[in-house]
Structures are given as C-alpha cells and as structure tokens.
Image (cartoon, rainbow, N blue to C red; front, side, top):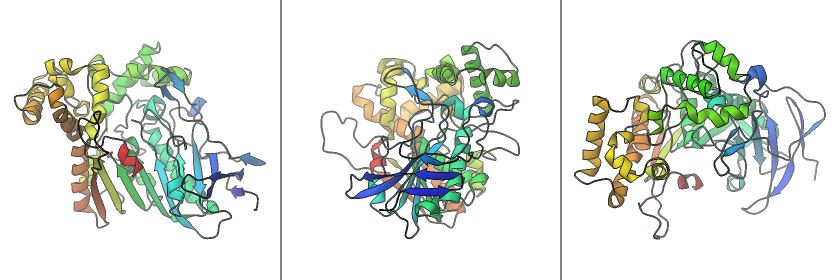
Length: 437
C-alpha cells in the first residue's frame, strides 16, 4: 500500500489506517489545524487562517478539545488551542470524489468535541462518504459578547465557517467532493447548522443541511443580557469595571482555565433558578461584521437564508433533558411552589413580574390543569419542557422556511421506543438517542 501521506495547502500530513466497527478499514487524518490558535491577542477574535508548516505533520492523533468543564471531576479539560478537525475517508488512495458530511457536535455550546470517542465515523464511512468532524470554541471563550469593545461575538460559530472554508479548499485531497457538502449536528450542533443557514459568510460552503434537536430559535440571547453576563464574569475574576474595553483587555490576561471555571458566575442568581439555561449561547450582534445580520425569526420571515435541501426534527420527549437539571438545581417541590422558574429564560422576563406570573399561570393550566407537579405528572412536565425549549422553535422555523424556500424541507419526529423497563418513565426517546439514527 502507498504511504498515507497527503499534501494540502498548509503542508504535508501523515494519516493512519483504522479498523472499522462496521467491518473493513478506513483512513483517518486527525488533529488538522484549520485556523491559527485563538490565544493571546487572538482570544475573543474571529478565527484566522492556519499557518503553513514544514516537513510532514503527524495526523494520527486528535487535537485538543475546546476548554470546558469536566462534569465528573468538577475541573476543566481541553485547551484554548483547539481549532482542529478530523477527516475520515473510506478509500485510500483516492479514486473518485465522494459526498462529504461535516459533523458539528452539540453540548449546550459548553461541552463535548468532534472526537471519535464521542462520535465515531464507522457507520457513515460504510455508506461511501467522507466524514469530517470539527472542534470549535465553547463557553465564554467562544461566545462572549461585549458590545463596545474589540471582542467579536459568536466566535464559536465563526470557527465553524472557517472549518467549512478549509473543507472547501482541501477536502478533494481526501476524496471528498467540495461541491457536495452536507452539514449536520444535534442539539447545539443542530442550532449551529441553523445559524449557518442564516450566516452570509457561509454562503456556498455547504449544499445540504440537517439540524437534529436544535434550531437558531432555541437559544438566541439579546445583546444587553449577554453584556451583563460578561461583566459578571469579570467581577467573578476580580475586575470591577463598567468599561467594555477595559474588561476585554483584562480577560485576555486571565488564564483560559480560570475563565472556563468561572463562567457559571455569569448568570444572575435569578437566571440560575431557571431550568435549562446556558451561560454563553449565541447572541445578537450589530454592525457590518455581525455573524447573523438580524433576529433569526425576522431573517426567516424575509427569506434571508441559504435555500438548500434541509432536514430537521426533534425526538418525542426532548423535555426529559430538563429532569436532570430539575433534580440537581431545584426539586419538584421547589418548582411546584414557584412555578415561575419554568418560564423560559429566552423570553428575558424577570421573575416576580406580573407578566412572568401570568405566563406561568397559563402554562400550569394548559399542561397540568388542576393537578400539582409531582411524580404522577412528570410526563406533563416533560411535554411542557419539550414544547418550550425544542418543539416551538422547530415547528416555527419549519413553517417560516417552507413559506420562503423552493428547496425541499423534511421535518420529522423521532419516536422509536426501546423495550420498556422500569426506568423509562416518562415515556418516549429523550434528547440524545436521535443522534444514533
């Protein structure tokens, strides 16, 4: 067999042959930098093209994950230098160009990576496609928004565009067709896919899209709230200032690990009481360089999105994701006593206001009637959380896109149930199993 070396625009790579769980073998090129390390003065800045290298770069090991909280050890893992991607191809040497699938991982814009430990390529490669997975900046390092400073918002999404630019430029060297690229993702990855449909900078970089359990309507934060969170983060790290640029300069001096460990402090005490909140999700931004040039709903209504074939859907019990958060933060009794805690944080409503109370009362009546929130009505709770955090955005985005696009749009609900056991109440597949299919 010929050596597994390939020359791309930045230099030469040495890959490896891997036994497939689906049978046979495939060929992997791992830990390929698609941008400069976003460190030092490049922290909180848009990604820049990667530097070339001399010699042959070892591409047999995956690159570092984005810095994130280690949920098991309550510490951190990963590295700020994280802008790597992995390419897996079913055939070597290359003979003909194959369709390309680019996976964007989920994890609430705070966790996970594109590594094979999370999402292996084996079964995709059995379908004769080239599979690409990417890492992108997470948490405050990827989504800090500090209007009035030199901080660029939504850099985690900008990273994804840079990765797609790399794919467009180099994927043919691995047997991938740059004119047949499908982007797909789940949860925050699904939301990312939907954001890319709205991003002018992503035009022409993909030709089909699949958003599983996530849309741009799921977690879009207004700029004033995101700015407040940036200042709370600074306060937690010892910077008392009202000057956005002073805060930005300070945060560039703080070790990245400390920023990640402190980012939970960015939410107000009130926000921390809510169910399914994210400290640093994508946010609105303004100006000529804005990644998304307006409110996602407005852009969809006006048809200002990339009109490519699109598959999107949810599972039948997305709201099960809220059960873990509920029992970790505030138990059933607490929510029953203070039902305003379930009002979605994305509505930007303060607790204890009349509007928030009215919405909470209507939600209680619609989903629970005269019954209390208790073990017997957990299914009602799951249904409510499914609608509030997933189904509403899913149905609304599909409706708006169908009205404005001539490209095919396919909507699904995944409802495959495993054999029943005592641990499966409430019923229905939760947030993650849809990824497997």
